[in-house]
Image: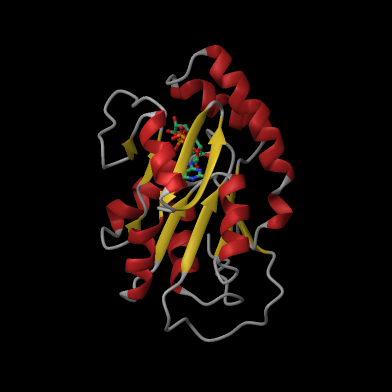
Length: 207
Ligand SMILES: Nc1nc2c(ncn2[C@@H]2O[C@H](COP(=O)(O)OP(=O)(O)O)[C@@H](O)[C@H]2O)c(=O)[nH]1
Ligand SMILES: Nc1ncnc2c1ncn2[C@@H]1O[C@H](COP(=O)(O)OP(=O)(O)O)[C@@H](O)[C@H]1O
């Protein structure tokens, strides 16, 4: 079954020769990190932006790998110095994309992937309208709750906040160019890679 739904209006074109920026968003617990980790395992050459965050690391998370873990003061400085391409507050913490690394990669001709929240995706749409916005959707609300709870990394009140945010994020799906339903991590990773390597309007519906 195909799980990638194109919402773009641009007619199909040839595969991109210029690099492209792809943004992956979706509610907390839908499987964004899992999909990205799988894609990078199969395709280590894919470059993923590492965000800065004020959230505390989860067990096993390392500075500079999953995130640059910074305090509020450092985050304020990043904003003040214009070092963030976009940033947002999510469930009580701040997250932002370091601008220079992204622009350097695009300049070098490499496709770039950002895994960020809805507010960040909207900022990228404004500042870089050529970016491709991909929405990762859960197979159902019940499955989303199961995944978020089953991950076991958040306290119940944090899960509640994330589920509240998830309702808002799910309602914004139509703002995205493409929706991928995360039923199978392998299928979605493949779809995402195909989307990253193709020009807007030439969207894959594999899966
Ligand atoms: N706007 C923005 N959102 C980000 C950034 N980095 C991560 N996020 C988003 O912040 C939210 C929370 O991330 P995290 O605390 O790692 O939780 P998880 O995604 O549920 O594992 C997710 O929606 C991420 O996509 C960023 O640089 N900018
Ligand atoms: N396709 C899938 N089927 C079943 N479980 C999944 C799938 N994708 C992710 N998960 C599980 O859902 C939970 C949340 O995934 P995660 O990648 O941390 O989500 P996100 O980064 O979107 O918050 C994890 O326990 C993960 O193993």
